[in-house]
Length: 217
Image 1 (cartoon, rainbow, N blue to C red):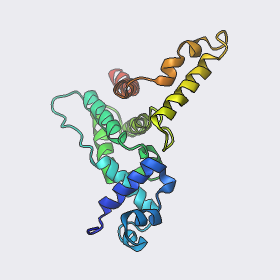
Image 2: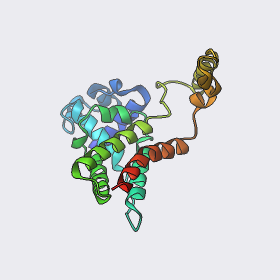
Image 3: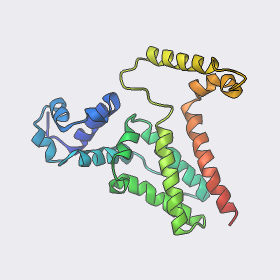
């Protein structure tokens, strides 16, 4: 292969992480898959922590927040959170990557966070409140992007369908007099909704509280 780049390393690491989980992402495994020696990787990343930071930066780097234009602060903040969710959703291992590193060490994440802080402050929140609001929103975005739940790597579509069927039947078989709502809503509980609705409803649910607080000021 040509000259080994940091981008090629993190792309391969994300590919392995998505398919097999982060435990499978090791310097030795990456070196083998990339056809180089482990020392060639250490030139770019001295340890796995640095590699994880590089992975986190890469998976967010493709997200470019829209220009503010004349939109109200809450609409821009909604687009920011939704955009981050849809960027992260491309990588099943994204949540695990971001949970294992200090997010303040990731340049691309800091860009999103700084924008969110500015929007919260523009709504009239104090610096302390803005910090909490953005932490809640960005962590919610990471969690929403991880769902509907990613099944363990290696599951075939048929296996996933069967797992969902068994889970639905399990809920439907509960005592209806004790759990009437779980029994009645077993299908939507298990099968869920479209990704688009799941994402937008989740963001509106979380952001609605922020908008309501701002309106009371």
